[in-house]
Length: 117
Length: 114
Image (tube, rainbow over all chains, first blue to last red):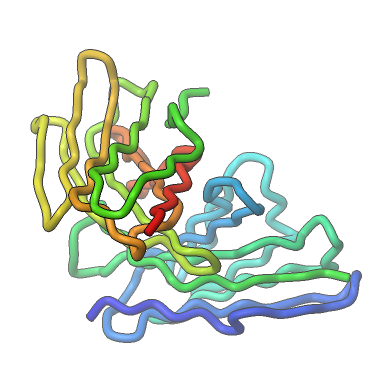
């Protein structure tokens, strides 16, 4: 149980295009999901908290107009990287909290590797 | 700002040895700590957690120790196996953290030599 999937697992795009990444909780409902970014040999940095039915909460320094988050259902959150540039190339990881589970527990997805040319 | 950090960025051990991975945290208000394992190209995998009202917790082949006096957390892996090779992160949730957000440490790369 408690499986989180991400799609796509990797994507290559041209500079200036937009890329959408999906995060799904497969066997539980998730009112809250989190989006992280991880650069090579570095730690996970929280970008934003995605709340079902309301606006996402962004961490300091993260541009909300560049990283659009939509959490339209209890099992799906999407992250859209708009007008992607090479510096946006990174490993994007989502996590989800089971609405009926412990508040401290996050289940992580497998990550999405983004390469912007 | 306060952060969670690690003493050692890399650790190399022989198969069968015990491994100890350390983490120093600076937020004395942290209430809950977790160790994650991340294999190359994958998402973090939960290993073990501990609350601030405990100083030791054991799992299968793993033990987490918490020393609140010096704000130090460690992960001990017994009889380390090649499959344990990965990056290990400690993470914390401070008391009162909005949405119970996790703060991750820098990570330690564990390499197990056969």
